[in-house]
Image (cartoon, rainbow, N blue to C red; front, side, top):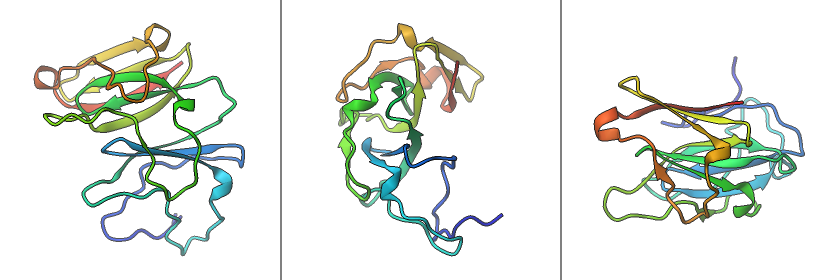
Length: 173
């Protein structure tokens, strides 16, 4: 099934059914994050290459994409490649327009910086699951996680040096 044209090394990282009431949140590997309404996206055909969702700089890429219902009682859960996890309000990221640079949701560290691995939406009944290449599984109940601001890097939940690299992060309710 063909859905759109891709250029060069581009790849699809997310696909979901949406309505005009939904919003899109995109984040680069370096934690620049943009949030915008679905109404900002024009309908396109299968021969098009899509539309620009956000501005990325050389060496960056869109690492995570989610759709959200702004009226839902959900928080954003940010997972980094170093195994850090943080819970934050989606309202810490104001809706703007597409094709913008966005705001930073992790504090930049000079040595061993955190990079976005996954963005997840969760409610207080949710559980976050992290799985490593060595089969280590870490589970956290969202209700037990404190909300952090956008400048926090969260809490390290996996030690990638001993537990292995993250291979999967997901939510269950």
